[in-house]
Length: 534
Image (cartoon, rainbow, N blue to C red; front, top):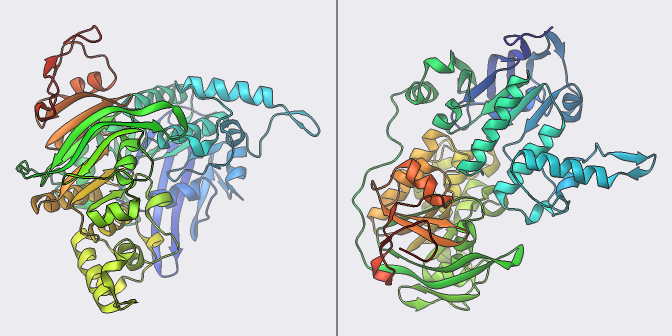
């Protein structure tokens, strides 16, 4: 009989070797019934590999997995799920061309007869599990038409339907907003209270400590620390992850005051998946040379659609986009890059990287034209530029001689740096970044924001989105808050608290000063509880 401290799932002396690379080294790891075990480590520490072994996706080179104290070798993830072990993947494993309900019941359909699928029951069950997560999506919607946050909810819903005794969650909040995280935490607490063992892998240390009972830290493929969550804090975890004192991941800097580079005037953008709904509604803003401007908003706020419209990836219905005073109506993506505005997309795996290319090829891809002479690519100039950028973005390829390393061999954090480095190699004047720290560890996040700050000091104008309140409060010179496509607040760094930010973003604030940009002729006023009054 299981008790709240019984080890349901264990790794015993697990080592995983790929060629000459040891990803895991003699790892002992236990997951207890009714407890949430938070697993931390830098990108490349071996966390995801360990989770893939525990869930049957891979097998250890040496060592073994135990389920209820008995050795087990899962033949596949489906075999693991049938024995009570489910996983929510960091890289979503959904089929974008199938509906939500088809994804939830793929290979485990509800049958109304020998050859008939009971789609009515599947639809009702899908709606019920989504409602439990406070997500009210049509079960027949295609997953490919959903936002990244909605897709993450579907991935979580699919795991919940398996009614597992062990639930592995690998970066489950990477695409979720603060309210969605609260809902997920409520569900996790309910699962744990019913005896389910939870493994919670996260790069958001403070957030994960809210839900954890036990803390485990990995570094360089080894398990280096285990402690009760109530006895540790963020600094303790970060120091064991990096084996050094943890620096502040958000560099301090003076606010940029250069010339206006980017200006929006009454921009209106329709939602790509639902043209009848406005993703961005009559938005005006400016970004100046050397300035970092952040955009914070919940799912459906329009923050991603805004950046994609600026980059030319989706059309705007009306309004103006001006780059150094030059209107961009009718200007395509490539031409906008040539004019000095480039986007780092939110989904690096789908939109940011060519998985079959090397690190160097990915870095030089967008700016390849700069290395062409007489219709031929000057490889020496390309290689020198790539090597300088690798040094600038601190990608761990093992040195500039390793530009031919496959980009898929890098950690998530280093892959994100490659996407940012590729954008920087186009010599932009305005850099657009959609959730630049999504799914990366604390060390990589610090590197990314130091890199952005350094380029802003050289005059680069930066406009980035985030769903992380800490980033929103501490990184940008100015913070814009969007709600349902409308600008509901603008704040200078240090003038708003986390609690006030969350109130503004979900529309519950009734007495907060909202400092809107007077340069655009927008009235500065005090919000009241009545629409249209200030």
